[in-house]
Image (cartoon, rainbow, N blue to C red; front, side):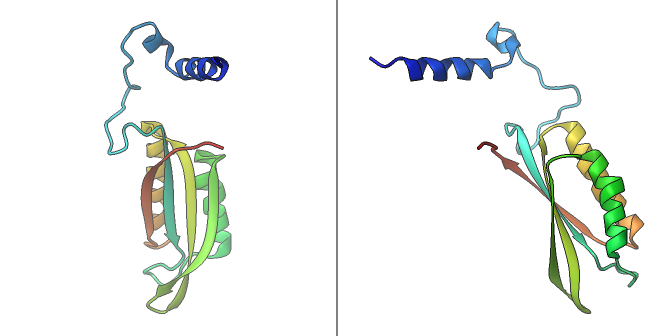
Length: 141
């Protein structure tokens, strides 16, 4: 009887359980944690759609975007950030957009860093819009 793979799977599953739970102690959430619709999801993917057109008509230049990325986004998430460029229909023609994908833990700290990015964009660029979508994800290879 081949017990090897089954035993290994059981040991790996047990190893991923927090030490407190392995010892029969209750595991409490991190301080400041609040339930979200994805409370059982360990990781979230946040999609942020930054419009390059602004209500004041000035818009966001490539240099301004690069500076915002370097000063606001990358310090908060030095890894696990993907930036995609695109166009979107606009009232005055074709406006550029940047879609930023951020893979992060479902924690109050990470969610606060995402919120800080979104809050910084509009005031910096004459009311340019940013739209945010959070989606629970499972990661693996």
